[in-house]
Amino acid sequence: MSKKINPYVLMVLPAFIIFFSFHTYPMLQGVFYSFTNWRGYGDWDFVGFSNYISVFQDGRARDAYFFTFQFAIISTILVNIISLIIALGLNAKIKFMKTLRAVYFMPNILSILIVGFIFNYIFAIFVPLIAESLGLTTLATNILGNPDLAWIGIVIVAVWQAAAFNTILYLAGLATISQDLYEASSLDGANKWQEFWKITFPLIAPFFTINMVLAMKNFLMVFDHIMALTGGGPGRATESISLLIYRGGFQGGEFAYQSANAVIYFIIIVTISVIQIRYLQKREVDM
Image (cartoon, rainbow, N blue to C red):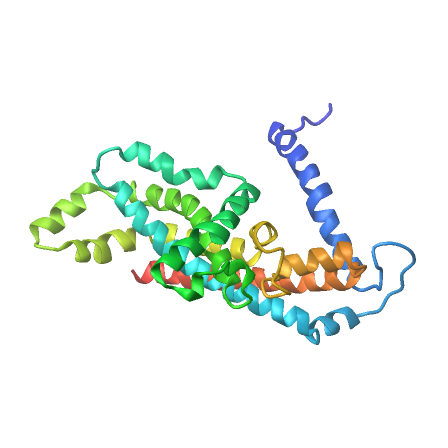
């Protein structure tokens, strides 16, 4: 008598095959080629760890890492502060609450390329016009064309778009808090700040952890925003690691070298995510 196949296996198997074929297998191929001198075409030879050593000696890679971490840390902090403030406002008993929630979620469903085109126009036309009328000479020109200020424009656009998703997660966390706790704290004479710090923030700590980890991971992998706004310029002032890997690997004949760079970056992102989760989850317990 033949053994009956578990139906749950049949449900999971197609997704596993697709994920392995289009994600895991190409990733393993990239790891393999990182130990070769393959340029993306032609013959290749094994070169050991020389690609990995070269990445640590590459000044262009160091600049890209510095820019990416600067961008990711600042954007992660800003997006969590802004989205938490918006979520607290949208969770209050205000008029048009549902309409406002829909409006604030709109940036998340817009194409990054369209958003980039709109903000390019804003930074090139509107901001300089307003700055000139106010006498702000620093902003009188397009900041995306300034090597020292272009990253600020990318941060503004990235935070504006990412805040929508983070706000939804914070709203989900706020919905789990019982109103009885606020009524009890009100009877005890607690003010709004004490309610937030002693009740709200500790109870949404798991959602804070999720938002911090997801935001940092997404910002570390930034690519679309830079392509839409600056293309990595002026010069290489806003070149991120993802953009460097893409250009060097697919356009510059450095497939093996950039594969090694991608492996290093993958390990860094995983390490940062694990540290974040462990630290923030420990903080949840302390609260």
